[in-house]
Image 1: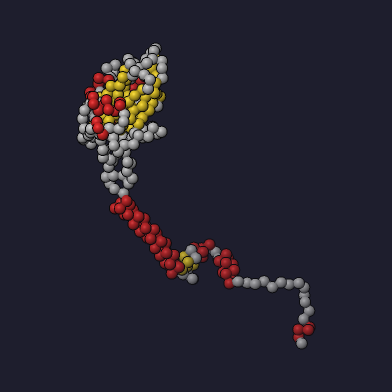
Image 2: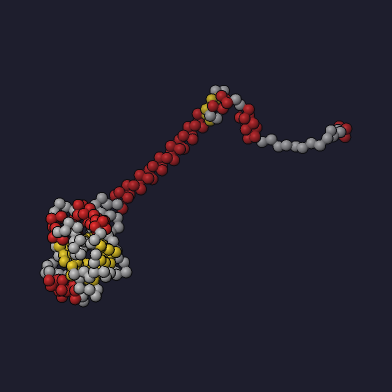
Length: 274
């Protein structure tokens, strides 16, 4: 047999050759001009016209579907979920805050720079209200620094604006909760459709005076200056830190003393003698 006369010339190995490897090798050997535009095979950047048509169509369809989904989501939010005249989620009841917004107020009547830091915040707040605010609260600003130079400081109590909230007020003394201070307030300032305000400083004889009164009038919409009550404190003990708690009262307002602003606001005050 002829195979018997075959003499091996040495060690050898069999290598497999795949079609895609041949393709890669041929592409690698092409000049750069052929890689960009190959007129012989009608290719641009390695793709034929049909290849470019397929890939461009794929991405156009992909981005069209993405834009279509985004458009449908925006339309859903606009027409169903979001409203132009109201927020998506409404709070049940308003909270209150103070101006100056500080949990600790320290007054040195002999240090005007410290007083100005506090009263400048009040002045900026008054400027944001309507034009009648400065005149309305003028009685508490006779020293031009809201009583802080005469040891009769003024603090503004502001009830937050809640869209969609309708207060259910205490319009009769018989409906009031068991709170003597609240009952005295309602008896001294008779009226209906009011969110009542009470403030106290425990174990002191501090006197609280209010403009327009210890209440927020809900007979009109609680907007602008209607959401603000000016509270001036007189007979404040000197060199003694006092703790002041103010609460708002309505049938559908819950007072949570654990959280400042949830139906109540708390702050401390110290007035130094000099």
